[in-house]
Image (tube, rainbow, N blue to C red; front, side):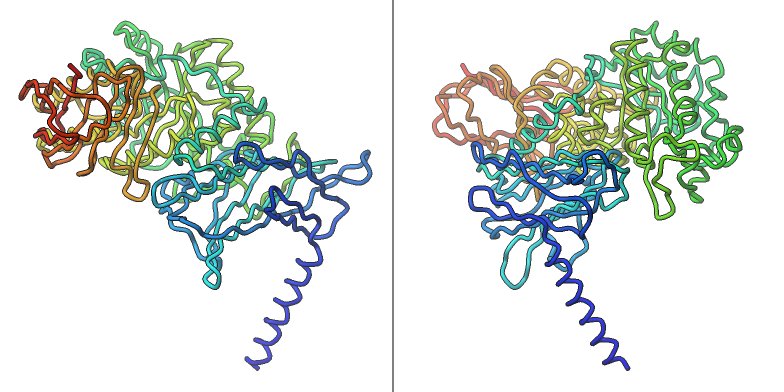
Length: 616
């Protein structure tokens, strides 16, 4: 019996493979590289246009169209497949925040799922030298797209597949998607930055304005206070933060409910139960010269919220563990309810920005009816989210053109840059190294959208040089601090003061300079940024810091590690230098002038200290 079942199973596989082969709709090639478009038979036909190779980058646009231009139908799922030899491929980078960079085998189910509310449709195959070998990106950042690059054991070839419209789509006459493949031998960060620019050049993904306030250090209440927040306590803490150079406070979860349990059972009414004099609180913060941002979980209506019954039948799902329902944005009354609350916060309460959380929970499941009926004015959940967020940012910027909107890592694709001007590394409490890695991955695709660290916290009995690693690991992002400043030991406060001031003085170099992270598999042990005559290098491991910029006359090296040896290699005409060494509290340890006898220099720098090298 088992033998018969096995025979039937393999017969079915053969039949399915033959069906797939029979349903190849189109073959096209770019510069000799062959691509196959595969789909099930339907009333739609496939065509390609704008197929070209330009400066080492392949382009092609794929169209799926109904023969009768006056009709509409649900487009069919289709995939684009091709294969390339695995030549100097060390790993694969994609925007999944916990990606391990390992290229999966072709029998693996591992793939990148991209949609408006999660990830971005791009991956990079990189070499053993962090150089781009093959970067694939597509223009559809709204609908669900599966992207994969897998290695086959039998031939060491990389098998690429892009699958479109696997989730039921609304009826259309045509669907088009652009594919971009970068084969240039350039650093991986340049290839990904160019993808971000490609997306941003599309009118449908034009990024929103980034106010300067979004690039200033901020204080967050989450790790320091969690849900137990109080007007006077926060105000006292904000005064200290302001004196240290923090320009805004983000009031997180807890302001809207007196319930301090984890979960979101009482979320959704958005009445300020803890900050019950909320307008005065905002005014008090403004009196300190600080901005104020307020947290909301966009999709959630808790089980015990007063409005839970009001939206019955208008939820996408229910989370038992979080004790909340997830609203369905395809209902216009749902979108209006949400937008009205956020407009109220900005217009009436005078908040300067919003932290909008959990957008990735706007997602479909097997029971979602993807049809425009029963009060829904959209069939697609993602198109409804786009409508919600587009309308929201339009209304908010009419009230305050410099309004700030923060999103958390995962919902960080090109479409999200239309509505958010701050992207934050996803939660990693007390996780310096992972925070650094997530920040780098965010920056690679974010263009000029402000990239923020996850909130910084540490144990107050840590040695100060170890506590400093939390701050130094996020130096190429905007700091978000979340410790109780009034309770910090004096040495810790000195460290925060010193490095916050240094970061602020060098913000332009760190955020707007040429961003060069090195060592993908090693969690980026060296990150360099240069602008004008200044170079800043952060060392996170015992690697050599190269000074190769001819226009640079000062290089600062952050010794963001426990070892004290900093080895510098000079590759230009530096002959005589001044060396200034500081510890993590800003105390000058040594100041010397040295004539270079070789291209290598070994300097003793305290753990978490700073070495400044000035050309004489």
